[in-house]
Length: 416
Image (tube, rainbow, N blue to C red; front, side, top):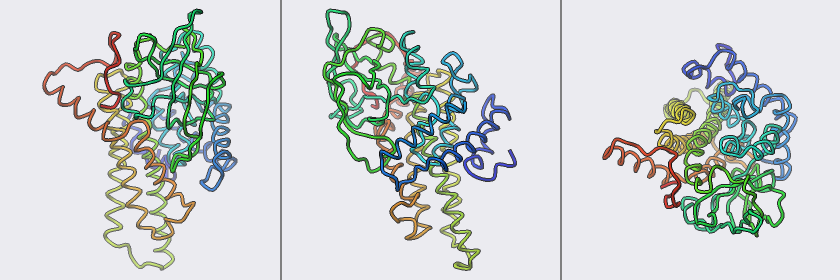
């Protein structure tokens, strides 16, 4: 790993030897992935200057090309159609993607489609997993007008039909991949009022979209998803009809550390870019020496980003192991990781001066994307509060509630 002097691998090189089970061959795959991603970005540039629709087409093509090259499913289990290599590779892969552009966060792996792999029926798995592994995207629809944290208060409901199917009616808001997803994993109340998840084909009848323009994370279309009596077959329900809250908790314990790794990759890129800028100004004679405040910022943010990345990798490992602490660590890793990345980019950008605040600057884009991630996949006050509540409960009673349990009414909060 001594040759990893550029790009995301320069940051990962000191960390990877400490990841359990990781071998030099896995590290070589990560190197190759970053090289491939660089080539694809040269072929399909996704810089902020391109129109949103064009950027989303290019991002989707990058994912499909990675699939065709056999580099989309490195960390996907063989039982799900993937390469069957170490699942812990997904977090470093996300870091590499984030380093090159946060909008590449869906370039590798199953994403939210992992819910299908883990909890889908045989027909649903057979229908969707091959498509996801060939490059299709899975969207997830949880948030409604009252907010994403109050998932138990969902107003999207299922009505039973005489043929044994259900029809879903409701409106989901602030949904990403709105135009690009091949399917949506929708959370709703079943006819008995229990929180349930199901898979809805994005091409289904009576599915309507209303686009909004986000200030960050604009690679995919974003906005409102409205369901008007959308048909759902029994085989399209994930898990049991009462499993919605358990599925959410389990999935996001795994998914949130990946969000953190992606965010920290973006901040690592900004760190490298600012460092190169300062070095170039010094070599050109524009500045004689770097001020102490610049050196302190470079040193402190480097330490902070690495520490947060280690926490994210640990959180993902706990989730993969089914550890009862996974949800606690997932909440903390996502909130702290994104907060750390956002703070680091904000501080580092000041060292560049006005040039770092021009429209189209990658520093400005990174800051906007990271600001958006402070809301996406769990707003941070809710995540920190959830972690604190878990810690307080554990101190009072050492036994911890497992991620999955018997069916119950959906009376809990996703983030609280």
